[in-house]
Picture 1 (tube, rainbow, N blue to C red):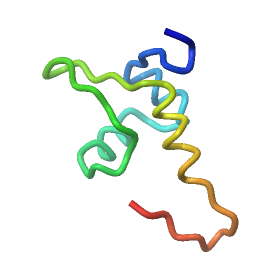
Picture 2: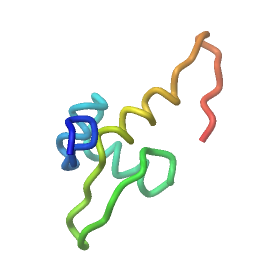
Picture 3: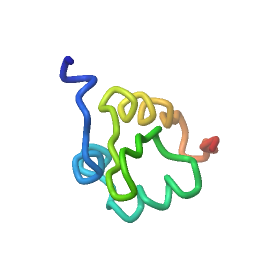
Picture 4: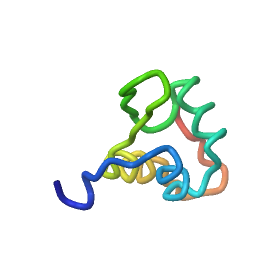
Length: 69
């Protein structure tokens, strides 16, 4: 597995996205964040490549660009 496909914990994903764990939890609830993997009731993981792709998909060219959910 290369570095781009490494598994990230919630804390690592939050650091990468520069967000709080609570914000990411809300995005999971709403279904508008990066794809995640639920291994158990308390274990959530993210693939680094999918987090980066999700971040790239949020790129804007203007301040009034509307982000699609």
